[in-house]
Image (cartoon, rainbow, N blue to C red):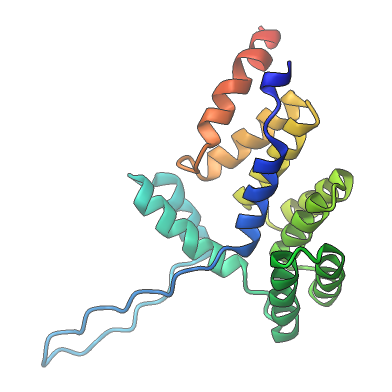
Length: 201
């Protein structure tokens, strides 16, 4: 039914926002009391961050942890790939999508093991109305980082526009298992579940 189909322009806006998100700088630790040596804390591992994200007690805590995860995933390990990705973001902001995809082609060639590079190129393909290429890149993202909840959610949105409700629901549930408090995710699951789960009874 047409009312079940999501608004395509909204989905595009959501994917662009995810691509162009600017992460807040890390907060500074409080100074230690005088006379006491400060102990340098080891940064939390990605495993720790994903565990905390799943167990977060409120939306604000979950969003803060999600930002830290996205910061980690957003680092390619290559200054050149990072520069190309930043230029791709600027190209997307100015709606120069062919240039954006060319830049992300170069970034993923330089760093083929960087999951976020494929995720970002998928966003550009989606904006270019090429869902098959977007799905392919999202699947590549998830091979490299199966916990990439943004990729799972994006995959669900694309399947939803294709009226593939079963795959959309599966992808949304995979995202929810990783990030239960993700915006709008549970409402999407609640809309799809009666149709799909009811058929499986």
